[in-house]
Length: 444
Image (tube, rainbow, N blue to C red):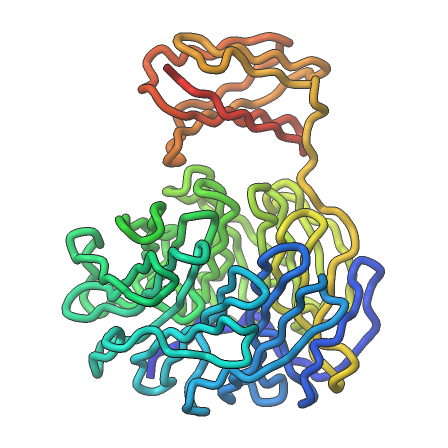
């Protein structure tokens, strides 16, 4: 039986008061103690969530709930795939009516993609011949970037990871050829739930401590090493979780002594999307999410150790501010600094189950006139004029996330030589303290 990614949290079946920053909403599940497994935010009004059994988490639960009014009302439903023993990999949606899920058998794997176009009233199988090879195929996840382009990926089959893309909403699927995928190591496989998404980029992790990455919605792939010592993202001893804010900014939370009585958790970071730092000890909440495109992270926990509650960091996990303690906060997702939800457990169909964030955690930006970067387009030199800043750091990356240069400046006006850069788009990120500003420059 294939392993799922282990949860960092211990389930506690109690219902406590919530802090001001979170507003309780009712998921409307009729069965009590339904937890939230997956939170997918489409926009400020539209959110889809899948459920799990908060009493017996190993039970296969085929239920979802969704809102199209920002959570004022939630409508639950069944993900009817014709077999109640199948498990749900994840849910991905593009509007209030259209969503997809992946399903698999917890013992034999295999799997299929199902779609709804009527808000979950009915679900129709889209994959037929895919993920059907006994003892090899195992669907890990499905994701749609928009109404047409999607990807479904699973374990190696026939010597290569089984990955399919679609450009017509899932009506037809095309397998990504082995020549576009790095070869798996002997015995290498992925995990249900072991992936991250940012824009058109997806990463998934493996039991060999590797990360597969695509920046073009699944057409081509690269293979990245995890941090030193990461031999298996899903092992009980490591239990690594991957998170990315954009193509270059990401982190892994996990441990290298998971067999210890009290595991020491660490966070490993990347600023170029490829290499990882040596890691720092982390004592906060175990469930993390980035506010997309920022260095702000929100953390939540259902665990009694180190305690239930939530916190946030605006400096990519260096320092943390507590939001609340003593309240169970489950799976968490944010659309932007003021729009986010995290899971809870419902009491009944009219009380509890999910929390909406009330506040603003957006990454602090410089005032409009504080930093100017010009000319644009540029040919040889880019000038950075930073009024009111004593010092600041500059990082320049290309469209793929490759770091072209980093500089530290302490005067008002400075220049960066780009004459040797190839023609194309570059991103100039200026950081000072907890504030940042990014400018896109075209190089002729």
